[in-house]
Image (cartoon, rainbow, N blue to C red; front, side, top):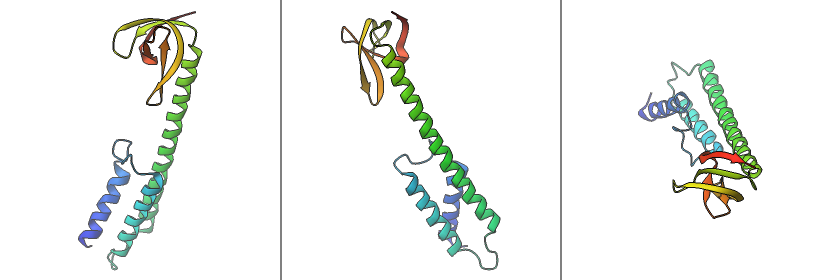
Length: 143
């Protein structure tokens, strides 16, 4: 097998053996990853040893693993979206209530929740005095 084919095979192997949100490039879309996988697969087939061709079941196994990875990524994206919607719903339910907690600067904050603000897509509570309290920093809630 040529060096190019060996590199493609090892790249393909690392794609499905070590795939996680931390090892996959976040700037690539799922379509880009599919195209990259298919290019590596075609390179592997083009450069295979004619006396020892790629096993069909191994190739199908690689395709199934890639498909499974794609489905897990889609499920993860759906769960992240669901959690974001739950955070917004929770934050909306706190408008008009009094809370105590720690503001975004680390200082103690308390007062009535006046509105919501979004910081990088994450809802935070804006108190009547202008303090911003992230949902994770709420200590007590009262009517």
